[in-house]
Length: 316
Image (tube, rainbow, N blue to C red):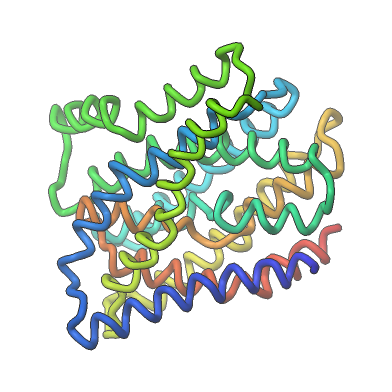
C-alpha cells in the first residue's frame, strides 16, 4: 500500500461518515443544533483523552524537537499570511478567523500517522519523529491557538480584557490539563509495559476512539450546500495556502544540515495534509463561521488525494 492509497482510504472513511450524518440530518433523525452537544463532548471528553493517552506513553528524543520547532514556525507563518490576505481582501471577522484556522492547521494525527506508517514501512524512527513533530509542532499550537482564534473572531467578539479571561479559561480547560498531565506522566519512571499501565492507558484510548465519529457528526450537521458569500474565493485560498504554500514553506525551512532527508519528507507530508477537522469544533463552539470551515475541510480532504502525492513526487 502506497502513500496515495493510504490517504485515499482515510479520506473515503471521513467522507462516508460525514455524508451519513448529512443524510440523517435531512431525514430529521439529527438536528443542526445537536452539533453543539457533540462539540462539547469532543472538547471536554474525547479530545483530552486522545491528548493524554498519546503523550503519556511517549519517550521523547530531544533531537526531534527541532522538527517540532520548524513545524511551529510554519504554523505561525501561515496564521500571519492568512490574516494578511484576509485584511487585504477585507474579509469580515468570522471569515478572517475561519481562513486562519483552515490554513494553519492540518490532519497530522488522523491522516498523518497512517500515511507515514505506509510511506516508511517498519520504521519505528519515522513514527517517533512524526509523533513528536505532530504533537508538539502542531498539536500544542492547535489546542492553544485554535480556541483563542475562534473566540476572538467568533460572533462573541471577545476582545480587550475579555480575551485575557478567555485565555485563563483555556488554561483550566480539559484540553490544557490533558496536555500538562500527559507530558508530566511521560516523565514518571514507571514500567510502561506493565498490565496496570497498559490498562490505565487503554481506558483513555477507548474514549479517544469516539473522537473521529463525533467530529464527523459535527461536520455533517453543520455542512450546508447553499450559496455562501465569498465561498469560492475562500475555498480557493484555503487550497492554495494549506495544500501548496504551507508544505513549500516547510520544505524551505528544513533545508539545514542537521535535518535528514527522512525528516524533510515527514515534515512535507504532515504540512501538505488537509485542514484539521478539530478546527470545525472550535469554530462551532465559538460561532466563527463553522459553515466555511466545514466546507473547506471537505474540499481540502478531496483535493489532497492528488495534491499530497503530486507534491511529494515533484520534490523528492
